[in-house]
Image (cartoon, rainbow, N blue to C red; front, side, top):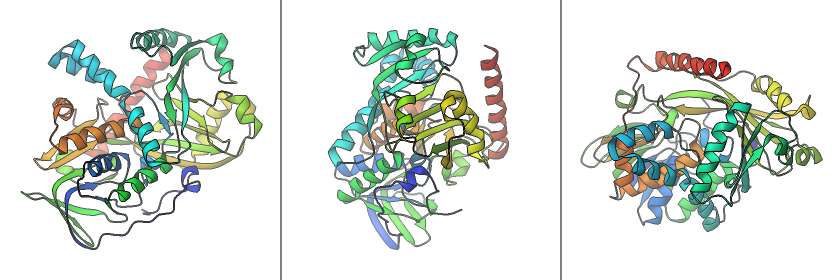
Length: 429
């Protein structure tokens, strides 16, 4: 497996070519973070802002995994919120549960927006998102969600769009209405990732690329063993999500890869404005959904599907072209310049997994396709916990998770069967 980033639209349009060294020798730090994606970077940056001496190690390049490959949508969605609501209601009551979910749901946007401004990160930040109703019956749930947004004082930032008005936003006959939300963001995720890495380095954080961790050595003062050296730390955070193979005895069977596909068309010129006049990011209301947006240089970036067996598609463009042309018949035959896969870390109950492997070794993983916003929320929660403020972390740690006792291979296929079942239910609605 190459340690370089994949060939994608994002990697072709990076605004930084900074390379960080491989680890050589021994280091002593306050906190060692494993993983150079958003969870690792967000946590490390929060800790560095507190004055902690932090070292971050990445087996490949910064942003190599899903943090540098995703759809670039920062929405007010928290994976597993239904399961969180049920479990937390039993533990603390409905009012506490609803407030906990609501406050977290929008925290990611605030963190990302402020961080971009604070550190001058150029990542094609735009505002505006449309949650589109794929079926007419989906508008019932849209109305309920809209009423909740209004009740929560977001009425000036959202609009319930009827089917007859969808042409203001998209030149497609596909949808039956939706919710337009101006608080949600979309951006170039790899440039955000690299910008956060630069911010971390500017605060004295140590970053090492192409430095895979071979072993976490537990003890009163834990350490990381790497091929080129060793890092001794007071605290260690494992933030590799679905990509790492560390601590499988404790973490195996908890998270599974689902390979989503994304493409970017050739620049569309004036046609980009015609099909998406408000320049919104979009995802639809299906269980396995399509999502898309217009890039800064006028391409359609379109993602969809999910292979829950853990295998990547061999021809993502061929898979997604019919979806593009169904959504926008005007783009029939459009040239596709880039195609790539993005492995999402799927948790069976969809609740992000935050926990401890020892009193000084932590882990955070499993955002089930909601990683851009959720990873930044989790980064703040983990940084607070590592520094001693445990309230939010304790809530997550108490959630019960389903662990497949049959190994990763069979677990993936059991998950694929479950996803097929829900897809069949959706088609029968």
